[in-house]
Image (cartoon, rainbow, N blue to C red; front, side, top):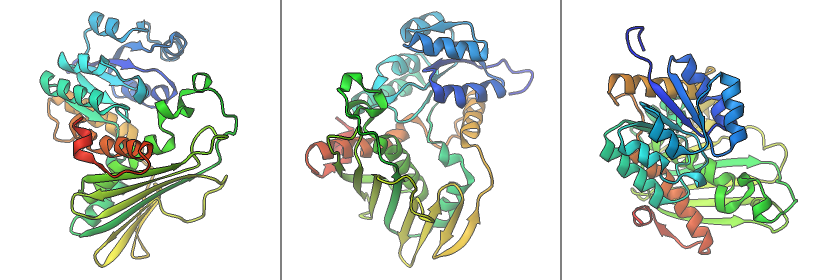
Length: 338
């Protein structure tokens, strides 16, 4: 934004630790005016307000929207807490930045997408790694390749064995709300596979290993079929304190070779290092690009919008449903339209 342009008026819906560590300081750094904060937990909104010197605070999202004149809404609440606040804002023309995962319900997510379309505002979902040069280079290297199979793996440590009643558990340990690490990271992994390969998911199947004495599943596996017939497998394992060394996050096989992405560090192609990454903050970059797009009324630089984000959400929610049905294969397009 230039000195002659008025600062964008931003409301923050959801003021937990993630918003305080990333979006709020970024927006202030980028010259936006955060006019209000909102969180259903009074302590969370008070903490954020005191930390950043923002006096106008709400615990009711509808009251915030009815009272404040906003250009942009940043929705940073957990997926299970998405109701109609985002849709109400978007329908009135407020530009929408949505943290991922966008919802635990495709019905709710589709209502938000329809409201964005009706309101005419810009939108994006925080699949921030699309803005990281590492993933952009992987996309470039795969642009002319015929994808055969893709693999993603996410190892982690054992969860707590203190199994508690659902209503007494933190929401992150409640399957009905958080879906375990495979939900949050699954949406990420599906989106980055879509971004790198240019393919969308047609069918989904999943299995969870969820022993009763642990707070979250020890393992889960998502089996996907892309619209081209190519396949993918996403594995989430909670078993060890230290992950196996030198294992890539992503390995993408194509006709004649393969490409591997090692965390945020490097890309190897057929076993040879072809790209090494520098330090980069994709959260700040995405916030910058979104604010600039809103200021210019030009979505060209945005690497996704809310509607496109549903194509990354639907396969993961379909996998969640598949696991509940004992591994039944789910048609993603039909599931996403429910």
